[in-house]
Length: 385
Image (cartoon, rainbow, N blue to C red; front, side, top):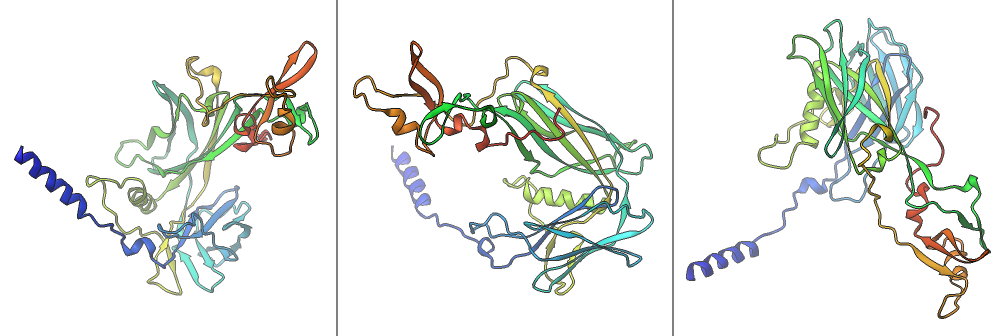
């Protein structure tokens, strides 16, 4: 008994002696340039995104760099300007660069600082062989296959954009016009929508240790069997980038520093050295690696009919259905006028309650359960089929 009391005292003492640890780096006033994108040497557009790092202790989650001058420069002194699109994005139409030359990115920010990447050779990205999926017990595993018939390209990076068709929990047959509840016109339907998302992890592949330059079923993303992404139809557009060995090492290092930390057995943080440099202040860190390559893409569609019939979506909200009467049974209060008719009401009518031919009230629920435009758009993408 005394031993148990002694151990309890030790535990309480240890807990009581804990102090919060707030390293100075969390609130560091320094902010460094982050450069994202590739110089597309082919016929497609080049898009470069510029931002500044934000403090972990701050409230800002994005810090785009505006009013910068961005150009692509060849080793023959040819320059190709990029146009500012807003929100830190800079772009130009297809450059169709000469594969026998090297190219770099030049940046001058509004405060006069100059940044520059190293000259990089043009890397021709092999086509994507296929994008596919495997059905697992808890959902889908999507993957990509590719190879280089010349056995010259061994390093790859991928990203993707997702689009899916989904619907709200309930379909609303009625809508308020501010003075009454009327039948909802087809043009105001908010039952079916399209959602969008993009990859947020670093996806890499290497065939350097293989006899042939083949990438087989490299994982892209997983979709849970309960996800509304696959309740109707889902599409993924995969972009593939060929990398040099140095570029691949940069992305591996970045992935380890940003995604694979969390325990003493994980890789420890290290410097992330890219090929971007600050010319006006060589000691200033710059985050980013600018490659010069063609970009290959492939899109696939997955219909719900291709999936197990036992898979059903779990909606990201709980939905309660309420009644609203023109004359409530006990109080005869006009609940429709009070809760459903005013613009911006907290509930939307789903269907009517009738006594014979007369409408005496409505079933209604929260907007999240009826209005799919709160999480998507009713506009069908041009590529949809």
